[in-house]
Length: 120
Image (cartoon, rainbow, N blue to C red; front, top):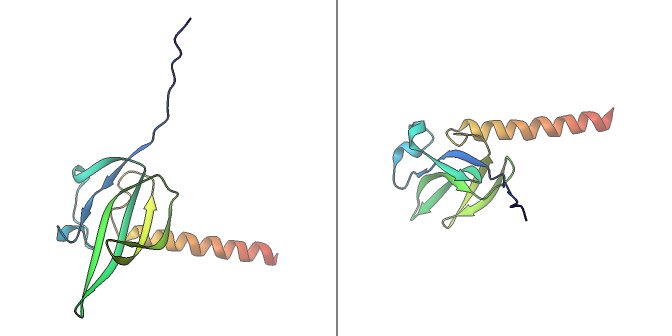
C-alpha cells in the first residue's frame, strides 16, 4: 500500500500583539515595528474601548490574534469593557487607526452601492 500525503492549508498572518495597559506605544499613536509582530494562525485584531474607573476615563487598545474571521468591524466586549473590534487578514494589518477608518469606509461604500443598485 502506498503512503498518502495529506497537505493542510493552514494560513498564518503576522500581527502586532500589545496592549496600552502594558505599553503606551500600542495606542492610537502606534509606534511598533514589524519586528514586534507575531506569527498568528487566524486573524489580526484591534480592540478599542474606554474604561471608566471612578470617573476617570482611559482609552484601552489591544492588538493581537483571534481565531480566523472575515475582515470587518463590530461592537463587542473584552476584559470587562465595551470595545469596537476590527479584524483583518493580511500581514501587519492591525497596526493603525487606519484599520478602523478603512473598514467603516468599506461598509459605507457597500451600503451605498446596494442602495444605488436597488433603486436602478
